[in-house]
Length: 247
Image (tube, rainbow, N blue to C red; front, side, top):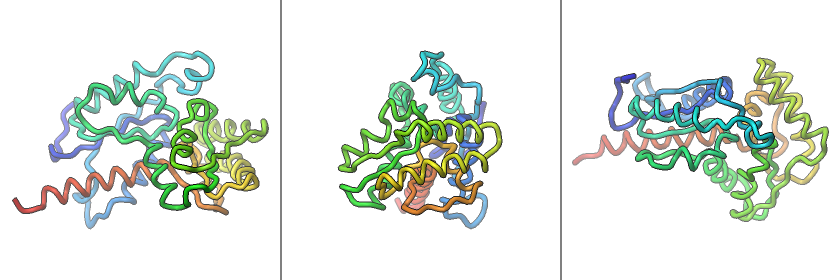
C-alpha cells in the first residue's frame, strides 16, 4: 500500500480495539490540531482490524495472544510510510515493548501521555482513581506509572463495580454507548467516594460512553485517548515548524 503524503511525517494509528475507540481517537486528534483548512491536519494512515484476538482474554484467561496480529498491523503501517506510531487501546500496551522493539520510528505510549496529563491537573500526593479493564489493572499500566510519579492510586474493588466496568465496555462495543456510560458512571461515583482527586478513564470505551450518557465530572477526568491525540498533534506541529524554519 503506497500513500502520498509529506514523507517527513505520517502518523500510523494501530487501532480497531475497538472500532469506536479508534474513531474517538481520530475525532480527538482533529479537535486537537490547530487548522485553517484540510491541509493543516495530521497526515495519517490507520489500521482498524477488530479481529485482533482479545487482549483481556490473553492476559487474564490464557487466551490466544494478539501479538502476531498486532505486529502484522504495525508492519502494514510502517510499510505505508508511517514515521510515528500510536495505539488507542490501553490493554494492548501489554505488548508495547514487543511492538516498539526493532523499529526506527517513535511509538507514543498512551499511559505516558495520560500520566503527564495527570501531573498537569493535580499535584503529586493526590489520589488518582483509575477505571480500566481487569487486564489493564493486572499489568499495572497506570498504577505503576502514577505511583512512580508520587500519586496514590484508587481502583474499583467492589465486585459490582468491577462488573459495571465490564458491562459498560461490552455495551459500548456492541453499539450501546449511552447504556455503557451509565455503567461507568456508577464506578466514577465509587472512585469519588474513595477520595479520588482525579480519575483516569483508562479504557478507550469509557470516554465515549460517558459522553453519550451526558455524565459530567465531579473531579478532573484524564482521558488517555485525548492525551494521546494531543501528543500526536503536538508532534505534527513540531514537524511543521521544523520544516518552516529557515535554513
